[in-house]
Amino acid sequence: SHTILDLVTSWGTMPLLPFSNARISWDVAPVLDLFVLALTAASFVANRILRWERVDYFLNPLAFPVVHRHPHRRRAADWVAKVVLALVVIYLLVGWQQNRQTVRIAREELAKQGVAPVEVRALPVMFTYIAWDIAARDAGGAVYNAVYSSYAPEPMRFVKHPTLPAAEVGDLLSTPLGSMFAWYSQGMYVVKRLMLDGEERLVMEDRRFFGLDNNARSRFVVEFPLGANGRHESGRIVRAPLGWDEA
Image 1 (cartoon, rainbow, N blue to C red):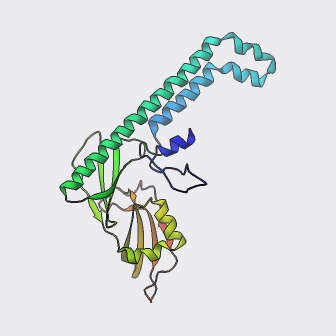
Image 2 (cartoon, helix red, strand yellow):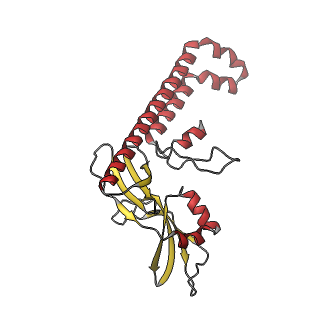
């Protein structure tokens, strides 16, 4: 169940290890979903209350016969677990439907702008799946970002994030940090050449997760300073914020 619950999130997991380290994510629910958390917590509390006699058994072996005196309480506890499981499954199915609908709308909006994406993902925002971060990648590697609300839908306003040509990016991907970052971002990354603090750098951005400010800054960034010969130096992770202070 832990693996399945990881798969439904936008972070995903690696269920094929040790045969493959591919990260798989279904983008159905955020990594922290308040509804699922509340349901499972309520189920746990209800089961502990209804099965309290089992706690007595562990504290005092002589209390074992108490377990058999309230079969209706055990049945009630079982039904609570079944109802909660059914609600979680229904909730995730609705999330899957919302994800598919959001991806379809994103493809339609991009088509209107003349963009033919090779991949479109709708990633649920933390705590709920009624708000989505959209990340779409075209054949040239550029990524288009937008935000969308299933509760209050409005036309998507995509921001294009171009990337350097593959010939310049390939050298970065040969480094341990660059290859790890490309794997971590599931291919949804861009590489930019920027002048920062008087220093030219190659910047890799994970465009799946970004802030809601005007710049739509990436949550996860790796920078490679360029030396005097134009070759990049060892990279470093420069920011991995949760972003509560960026809006």
